[in-house]
Amino acid sequence: MISTKSLLRIFILLSIIYLSCILFNSATWVFYLKPLLLLPLIVAVSISTNFKNKNILLCALAFSWFGDILLLFVFKNAIFFILGLIAFLTAHIFYIFLFIKEIKKASGKIEIRKGLILIAIYLSTILLFLIPHLGGLTIPVIIYAVVISTMLYIAYLLSFHWPKPASIYLLTGAISFILSDSILAFDKFYQPVPMSGFLIMATYLYAQLALVKSCIG
Image 1 (tube, rainbow, N blue to C red):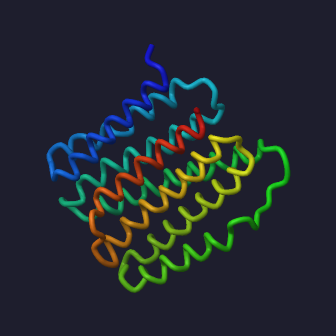
Image 2: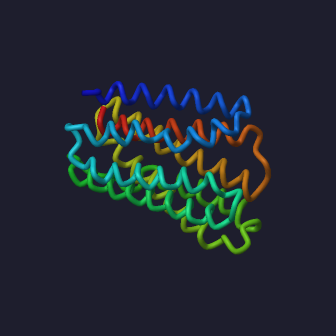
């Protein structure tokens, strides 16, 4: 039977190939590879035996996978962007639920004020830039920004109670997810970001890998 470590290596290899295709503008390969990217992580989590809340993690990955596929068809209709946004919003909610469950198991006092100011500054800043350009998507994007900020905040709190290297993977994964979403938002609503496609996917793929590794090792 294939091991979780082997599946994580397959994910890394697929990610490298995918990102190379973006750099070389191989649009056809990018289109067909994207739905395959998260599958090794999903299988790795499903066969893992050392993480009790793996079903919640699987839900987060599954909705991320749905989001990946939906965003492939944005060129056909803008509704696919909305559906993709909903899918990733749901994935972030599952990550929040997962991290809260893990915090409840943590020993020691949870200091809720830690990091709150920095994350509030991030949320205020990105909304300050984006809101004038959002039009009819203002409310959905505000909701999404609040949810991803909450995900980062809860991950930050949990990182104080998980051992290394899990805590490092957890925090860097959450930050990388926020970075990926922020680049996407700026590129779509504010102004074009150089190499946005590569940067969005590189940070997103690292985020998913790091969050999975933080949970299953």
